[in-house]
Image 1 (cartoon, rainbow, N blue to C red):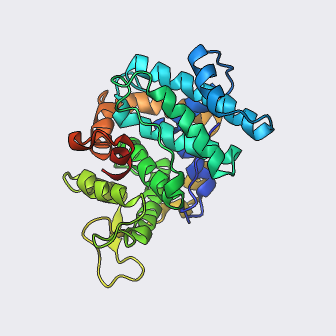
Image 2: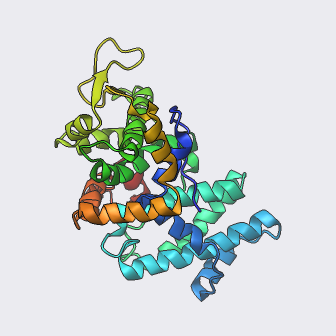
Length: 320
């Protein structure tokens, strides 16, 4: 099972936060990829293309070869089904396959040259059906590896925020407070890296995601709704002289997590009974069926494809 990475989270409930995040749709998606690793694909095209580039006989080479075949099969199935989620085109969802994949490759290989061969193989597969796959990018993040984790965290928050904002209720239950605590810490983290992105110089890979945040969140009342539900006060970030209008640092007006009954509840919501109760509560809330559609409408702004740069697809997904 994929383990959420929240190194930026400095709260006391990190273990509970990770358990809670695992219930969200992004991590369900990551786990579908993880489950594919248990398969032994035998697709002629995949065997041929992966075998041409990856010829190592040691464990690292064999593991990369198997991973290449698994991802090749996913790529071909995604193209056939028009998206990882059947209702979503590759341009909106493929970025998460890329993020998961680069992490997995880095766990196997330490050499940039071997990683480059792996991606050369996958891109040769992606060119088989150019028209169908023109929005389904396979991205090698090695040239921008120093900024990869920040980019990953920013993209992931965009996805899971859509789930969280629908889960948080006005009564601010113990589970809701965990969500609020996570959002508070993420905003603090966001402000710690935002200053690395200026218009004067070309910044790290994640700077374009920073720009998309402003477009995504400032055109509606989403943030104000969360501030109110979570009972947040806007405060100055460390090193600032005033409170920011957009993405300020946050402080909870009341720390109800200190109450023992709530603490017990937080522990219990991840038991089998808790899982059952969460399912019942979700049904009762009657969450709108267009949640995913709204989510990917937001993500579409991030993965926008510029027609005048169609000859450079990787440029578009990483820098536009």
